[in-house]
Length: 434
Image 1 (tube, rainbow, N blue to C red):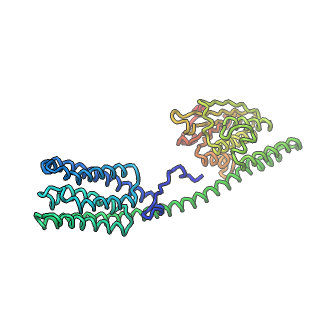
Image 2 (tube, rainbow, N blue to C red):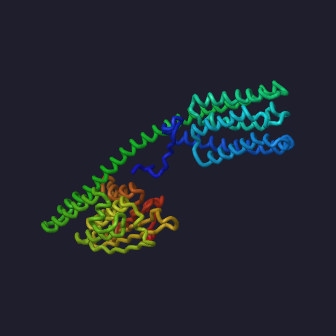
Image 3 (cartoon, rainbow, N blue to C red):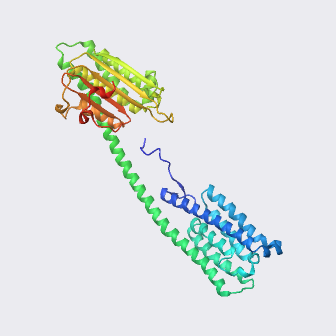
């Protein structure tokens, strides 16, 4: 699975209705829609205040309330729409049509004293409305709508007695300037948002390519670990024995084949064949202990499942941790000079959401001859790749403690507790809580 697959994809329709846009453009459109709803709410409040201030004009002839009431009702509907849905080109055109009709026909609903004024309710309502067509209508249509609005206001006002032609011209110019500002803002910010989305797409493609390379490298290294954990370990064991037990060799080779097949198979199919659910760490640890007992190692297993949280462990993590524990036990059998080992596995359920993966720790210890970690050959694959790297690649951490004559402790934890290595911190075995 792609590592950012849990991130919600920001996809919407562009001006034509079918052009996909990215997160930057979607965010810009959402912010503008919120701003448009706030401006529309302010315009509604202003219209109500104008009605209250000029109540004598409106109460004298009741039909004069038709214009402002229509503007308030339409403004409320558009505001609710902007809050719940993404603005569409159809909304932009319909919104402009309503206000152009008001500009042409509702001049008689404006008190004569402010009919050609910059602060009449009609001028304020139309200036606040221009943001919707300027930002959400298709490119050419948005230019036409922002130019028609001031012309419609001029034409509607010119049909009525005008007290000051200069003020009327200023009001029309104000609407024209507001439209130009929105048009320039749309052009500049849309261009920047499109460039940001293009850059994000390029970065996403590069990240996917790097992820594919990394995944291929991880798979190759895991195959190398499997060869080391199976074929190389078996051949090394055969060279150290004086006599060859044919039945034992055949049994061990069959176990190696099963291990490789299990690592290459789908986790769910493998779990069905084994009769236990995928992601069951405790069962995998017990199975590893059983395999090592067949090879002659006396393994004592202690498990602790707190809250039955094992089902929330990803199958890939279970495979990585169990294989790392298998290699740790193989090292005990091959190098520790003892035939006995102890394994403890602990699962801790999270306190909150049950879907959150639990924390786990698997500890392998022995009372063998031990070794000095500082003198381990860096080219050896067992500790470095089969245990440390394998655990780190699934998001966990492996801690190894050992001293000559005092045995060895290998602690595997997931998720990574972000702690430091035991050797770097100078901790004792009892600090591992085993």
